[in-house]
Image (cartoon, rainbow, N blue to C red; front, side, top):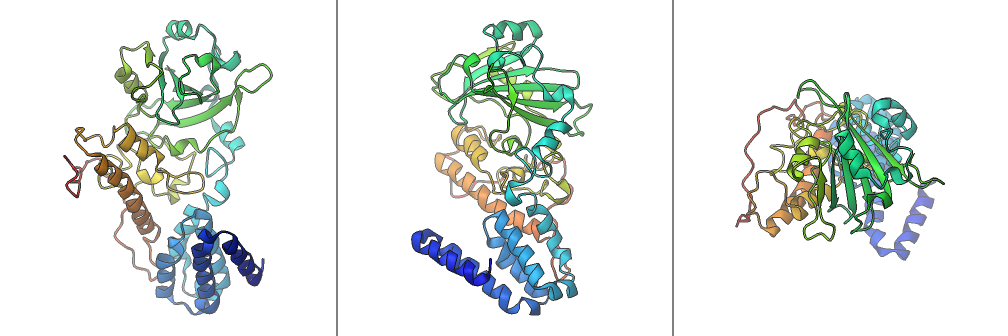
Length: 400
């Protein structure tokens, strides 16, 4: 599309939707800047453009396409100043999210390739369940008890849904079967809507990141048996540190029930991982901020060693996903772990907001760590230490 035609389209959209006015103004300002003088930019100009224009765009597709466009338009300046050294990381990071990434599961491979890469013993439901309508018989409690499986039936804080989670220990992989119903109070898992399989690889020591795989199944077939399906968002966005601890909704209409364990705490001890999982099936880790520490009150644990960095909490379009922080900090109030229950609601709300602000700043630092002028900034992505720092003191007198 020619520039003039694009300008007409954008202005038509502005007339019909005034909220797009600022987007149009910003876009046209960038186009004007790039069109008029980018061939005359020196290295300092490129640094200024990356920091003060390009990385202020909110979406991955915008950033990637604008950078691709300006490097093509200003090829002489780009090549003569060796600008690729300061843009490679930006290109390689954001291309993982262009068009929503390769697939639902992974930013680096198609869904077909991802599912084919899962070891057979980690990809399938157990024989006792995989050929049954809705993936469960009426006597599912007896089957879990007979096989030594553990389970928790509860009403979740995620989407106010009913869930049954079955823990199945294995030789090479432990499995979690997460049956879900979109109804808030459904005590019968044999009528649920689908099941997500999570497989966690066994490791010999805590320094090795366990393999971690997902497979989703629906019950839409003519016989209602589980069939692998592509449904939902990118699973790893919610499970950056592995399976989540179960925290039932308070005052839930569905009573929490456990089997094979004494209580929910014992069940969570089985499923919550001690170290972050191997994220290489999901992102290009050579070009991902896996060790960038985000959140003043979070980064002592979410340091890339003890727990995954919060910078990994992005959806398939590359937008920072705050739903998990909101649930953990504001709803369940299980984070931060060092909290003694005295943090006020206002402080918790500020904490979630501050995480988003800090994420944007830390991601930008990481993306522009190598400047176009050739001076490397202070590294924030160096190999993390096993030593935890003390949590920060909350500001504004929020601990009451």
